[in-house]
Amino acid sequence: MWQNIVKIGKKLVEQGLVESQFGNISIRSDDKMLITKSGVPLEELNENSIVEVGIDEPSDLDRIASSETIVHRNIYKYTSALAIIHAHPMFAVIESMLLEKTIIPINIEGEHFLHEIPVIKGASGTCELAEFTAHALADHKGAIVFGHGTFTIGKTLEEAYFVTALIEQSCKMKYYFDLAKR
Image (cartoon, rainbow, N blue to C red; front, side):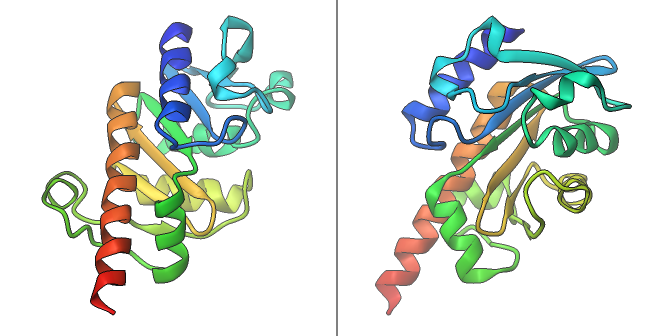
């Protein structure tokens, strides 16, 4: 399973959906999750860059796990997600700051697969953000944290990656479309 996290980490960086050390990835395994460690560049992930922590309760390993572990934990508790990606796609972040509300994709793919993209607020790594994110992802495959980045879910990491890329594509198209209308 860790090999898949490594593959997706490199892909996120290559596609410009994260900047190296920012962002995190996890996979659920029964009542535990494999999650990237804090501060490890996603393009340099290996078996030692990933830690296993419980979903139901914090552990001593939380101190070396991603700073967003609390958010991942809450998403797994309250959704059917088996994989989570937290990325920082530039156009998604920009659109969250411009609109500060739900984003409605204008492209056919975004409209079909996403319908709408909720924008939520909360400070990084907090209980508040964990609660708001899990609530948004109960009915959506992805959400954008205002001014921060996306959280996407899936049955697989590939599905969560697809949603991340589609949110960015949808936000990029909306940004340029709205700019052209001025």
